[in-house]
Image (cartoon, rainbow over all chains, first blue to last red):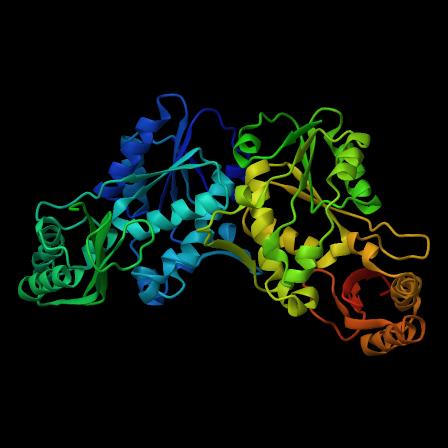
Length: 278
Length: 278
């Protein structure tokens, strides 16, 4: 497994066959393992699987969140080796951004909703760093997790609007036994918070299973589950949106997504579920 | 010479060797011929020279200017044949933009000055369409004219900040006998205006030749020449800026650029000169 730390070396690296990229911020967990396994299958034994590890400062709206973001390089490398990753790209901030950086990539429609409305500038940072990574690594395919569903939708829009010749794949969310979506931030939860967190997925599943078509009723249902089973949680948002545009909808009359962001202490967790009932 | 009109066909086109792109909005003139000849030399007889012809609506801040922009496809193709262009890429608006386009590329520092300050949104449109063309055509080198000096500087910043592996070359401005920089918009000038337009280049040359170091004095000099020799002209701006940052400077203490935009009737012309005296 090769490790490349500089942009120049990565840009010059000789490519053949499918180049599959799994972009991460490190602190790899079983959710990432799923992305990496998905990516590995796509190289079909010929191409190369690249995992990028870069905690991008420009997508953190909260400086404390950035500072606290876990770094576990050794375990990350270990997992990549286990999964037969061909190359890790792990640049420093100096490599990725110059002092006189002034160009950015922005998305103006999907990013108005959900996390985009509560995390100012977050998706501008995501779009910019993903564009940079795409240009440095030049993958043929990139794999993103469905846990960050809005991010996945925005990246698809980015690839379409800016005419990247890159296929974007979404990989299913991996969960703990109690349903909690695996996240690098779960480690910040204390025992009681962790216990209550099962309510996030439970609320979303109950919303999906309900025969109710009125979104306001479904949201009330979800909120009541959070309130009774996760009293330590403070909802950032719980919304039902069109699965492509991310716009809030009133009734379940198209492919929909129920999405939630919730704080436990300073730890912000997100999760979502595709609502299929029509 | 191949002509491609669709994004998909262009994206799938097989590439070998140097791929040199000369992006244009058509209405090709001797200035473009210079860009094309520069580009042809760079293919070194192996690679391919591609001229894109696309009047990008999103970079026109003035709808009338967009509507009036000259279209001369037959003559354009003729010139490209003469100069042994390998491929013309000339997509329609529908090919280039979907109805639900929401991603754009913006530059926030260099674009604040000169044309960026008087043509709202112009460089956002330029940065976005150039990013799209780079991703569709995937050139190894692209050639831009120095007449649009600020655009050239912004494109260099774009390539650096977004990590495109593309070399950007600037080609010298081509002039009519009286010094007027050749432009697709010159055709809109009437006889009297065309006569007076020699004053644009003259004013810039006099500013360059002067031993004066105070920019305010140099600008006064330039304005006085415009006032006396081009009374029909209405200055949009005449400024002296740092050649890299495009920020106005007070004294000629670094590589500088004198840049002018001036209206004759509804026709807006731009020109500039590198001020070398130190």
